[in-house]
Length: 200
Image (cartoon, rainbow, N blue to C red; front, side, top):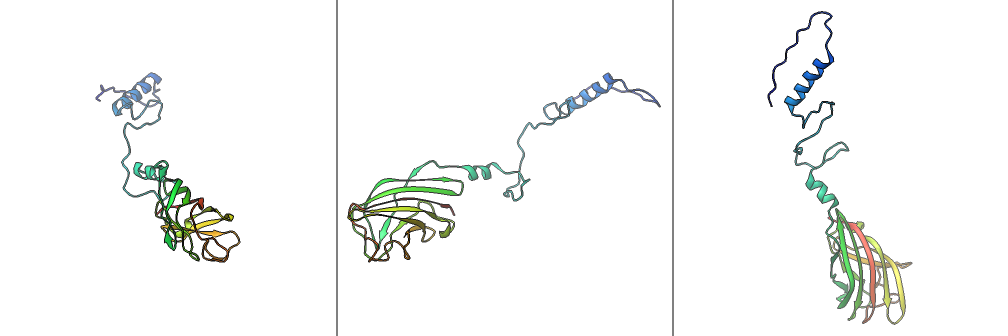
């Protein structure tokens, strides 16, 4: 945007009139674009910054939209049918099994009703809905209802980056390994729990 030329001649001890200074400043900021530089000295942008493709690494780095979207994105609660094994694959009815992923954090909660038997002396395992960054990041709790005996509760933790295993409270082996203490999955038994972990 062009502006008309305004010239003032100053000599020693000449006093600048406020109206002249203000008019010159107004002309200058109008020329530069009042959407960018305002008379009051504040600044605003009329467009988006273009940032490098690299991810931010310091606290004062700006972040690209794709980086922020990935960090906060959620797929919503998604249904998931895991594979349940105890030596053999166990047939089941899924009462509830959903997970949500928010950025790199996965939360999964489940309740499964067995309709076939497992193998005595073998640990129980479930497949995870999303591959974990590491098996040690997979942590949670479980409750197992033996329809003939009662409840068992304990800790759920990763057996690998794709499976979770269960450890009975005060038990020294993975749940199911000790056939003298742990039940073998049978019809109408119920396995429920939740885990949370970092996605790969």
